Image 1: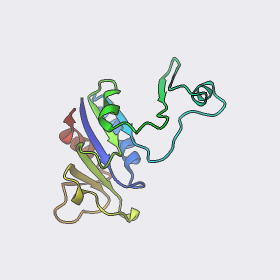
Image 2: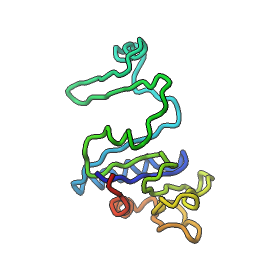
Image 3: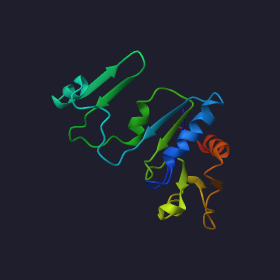
Image 4: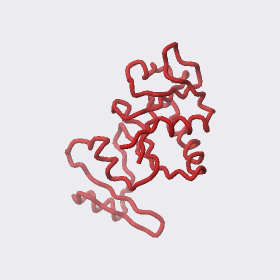
Length: 165
């Protein structure tokens, strides 16, 4: 399996870009999985559902399965957040894993930057940012630049910079 990340501040358009890039990659016959980091408390479950009741009762893990999909939820219950490497080991084998977030980790990344966000560039402080996808031209010395609308070129850059893990 190969790994590439999309790194950027909240609101830069990482998810919007992924929504456009994934069909481009899968259309080329490349199997893709994603791993998304959330900086906030999130819950895929709903109060009142049996699986939520199981978790609230103290279950460490709850696996919910149907004919269309399955999901495994693990409660950390005070344990530290698992590192990226551990989470990656839990994924099924695919051609490419795209990580959204985990911007401080050391995997290869493409920076997603939107000028209207008003946030600083990440690439000057991260040598693992190998390209930039932005709606503006980055400052001199930046990694190679692609415009956010160049979806096929961004997909190609992801494949070119992805590394085995």
